[in-house]
Amino acid sequence: MAFALAPYGASLIAQSLWGSAAGYYLQYLYLNAGASGDFPLVGYWGSPAGGVVSLSSSPALTAGANGVTITAVTLVGNGANVYATLTAGIAGSGADVILDSLTISAVSAILNLTLKCQLQAGNAKLNMALRQAICTALTSATAVNFLTTTANTTISFYSGSPPADCDAAVTGTLLASKTISQTSFNSNAAPTANMLHLTSATSITPVATGTIGYMRMVAANGCAFQTASIGVSTGDVRVTTMSLVSGTAFTLNDLDIMAG
Image (cartoon, rainbow, N blue to C red):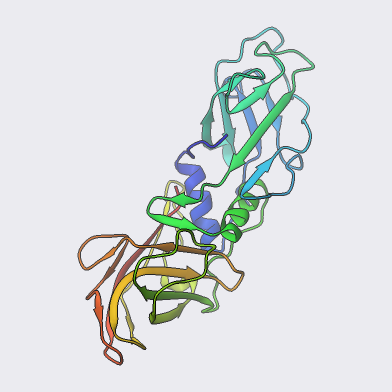
């Protein structure tokens, strides 16, 4: 199932994209806010495939309250911060978490729990490498490292309509590009932050003349996303002009990476 992350979950992804997961990841599945027991998740996840990761085996129920009916299920991480509120049900119910029974017993088990990183986040389309990395970040202490201290992430502007998805080859003409590092963006240390934001405007000199159609951002590890939400005063990416002239610098004023 695919479900929306709560602010702490989105903050985890934002920090991980910045290159600092800080040890935050999904650690427990709480039953009735933890009052009726929990399932430890660390070490039970399989390997991501196709932007999806599922439990490879069923963890043992911890401190279960026998006979209690499950009414609420939450994914939590460090400090018991709630990362997602889920629906629970038995096989065939279509719930986020499939349990053997909604009445807790000593042998209660998770039959299915799957995390799916969507192809699109807000206005941005993610490539498979980035979706896989986000799945890994949510289930382990491994950061995505989309941005690092080395200027090895490239922002490129192209003319024309964007490809159907970010795994497809680029289309149009490369108009301008710029390499950046994590120091160009805020670190999102706040636990409820869910966005990476360009901290200061940066000048870019075009290598060709044309009108900006879309932007693709690619990290050294192959993770990438693209967006056509670009404008002078509106959009996730804001520039001083959409009409670029080869050799004449323009300014990238703002770039927001939404994590959830």
